[in-house]
Amino acid sequence: MDVIEVSGLRKTYRGHDAVRGIDLNVPRGEVFALLGPNGAGKTTTVEILEGHRRRSGGEARVLGEDPGTAGRVWRARIGVVLQDADDAADLTVTEMVRHVAGFYPDPRPVAEVIDLVGLTEKSKARIRTLSGGQRRRVDVALGIVGRPELLFLDEPTTGFDPAARRQFWDLIRALAAEGTTILLTTHYLEEAEALADRLAVLSGGLIVAEGTPATLGGRGAAGARVSWRHGGVQHTEQVTDPTELIRKLVAEDADLTTLTVTRPTLEDTYLTLIGDHR
Amino acid sequence: MTAAVLPGTAHNGLARGRVELLQFIRDRTAVIFTFAFPAMLLLLFGTIFGDSYEDTGVSVSQVYTASMIAYGILSTAFITMGSGLAMDREDGTLKRLHGTPITSTAYLMGKLILVFVLSIAEVTMLLLVGVLVYDMPLPDASHWVVFGWLFLLSVIACTLCGIAVSALVKRARTAGAILNVPLVALQFISGVFIHPITQLPSWLITVASLFPVKWMSQGFRYVFLPDSMKVYEAAGQWELGRIALVLGAWCVIGLVLCLVTFRWTEKDR
Image 1: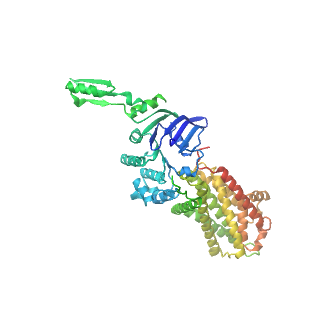
Image 2: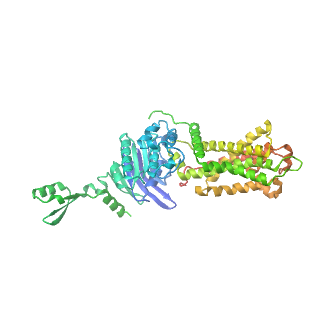
Image 3: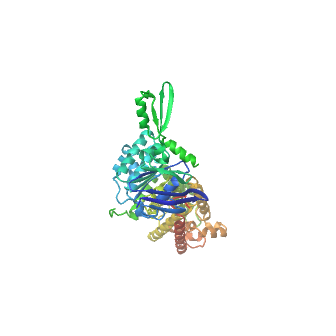
């Protein structure tokens, strides 16, 4: 049984179809990323799976239960990292983490969680005084303090500087290594590529492609483009496997300082995918 | 999974109450306005209307002290609850809690603890003004018993109504404006600002009698004023039984409205 099992999931708001029939399976221990432009239905999908919204149709099972009706015991097994909360502004980091830890049967030690998200130096600071990125790290701390089996991360690194983002990725990898299943939404492609075992691209409420970062949208089979200059002339060849061609060029004594081998980036693939379905 | 036990609702409720109080105390503006406003009104009214009620030896400022306790509880419980809930819905507090194993009962318990502590502090403050500034004598034990149940019923009724009304508040910024409309209107027709209430047209007294504020202020006047003052009440009596009945009914109405209207998030219908 997979941790997340979704089939034909639909959500309609006042006649507008936000999610139009999604199938999704996430096995235990996987990091799964949902990619898509704003309004594609990422947040709606995640909020249905968290139990925050009701679905209009289809089937959804999360940790073996229907998230629309699951109770407290189920909620103790999931962790939710909110996207845009600014609650508890007058509490300190430690006070808030300790408070939320108290709702769970077997929470992580408070100081350990704060250290994991890199906020030890700020542990006595009021949450109001934190920067946007630090504030999001508090959200992550609150999401993982209950030792969730399944963690939901909805655009977790929005507003992070590059260094904080790298640090955050390390944290997610550490959680994944402990066996936590993670469902992540993001519109940063390098984030999906760095973290996800598998990913799906959502566009207009539908999944338009699904795969690993290396194979998404036929990326693996798309081959490579080899370019080099020889005798003042630019050459370009599209090949499935560049090994043979490069071996030939070496044998011909071509000038290899100008050699480039490019594959379609995840971004190229992604833009093609959502462009096709706009 | 091991059989680790989920912390109970009472335990979580107490933790919520502690955090609610901590946050309230740290927001200095809220502290000053919540506490100073009713006391300031009392000082103003007491100074402006300085006379005595004929033959009774009771000063108008003493009557105001008793009536303003009703106002203090109403504004503390109703506004704190109504705007607090709207705020919690807006800043993500409720959404955050809904992603954890806490129950809605524990959340509401926390709010109730906050409201009770604030109301006790508020009443103490008003009594201090009454006793120190207006020489209001404190009543005997039997009156304090009435004060006990009256205080309890008043706080619960106002709190539950505040929760119910918060469902109408779409954005926290407008909460103050929306919640103050029924509040101020009821003050004027319920014998809090204008007493004797018999100066009002009788249909207006009938309207006021449908709501809890009139009965709250009447009850607190019974507690803190001499028996001779009952002639200034609408019925010429203190009507303690009816006060208990109406406030009890509002507790039930408020509870039903709460259960019907409370939801963790605002968005989903």
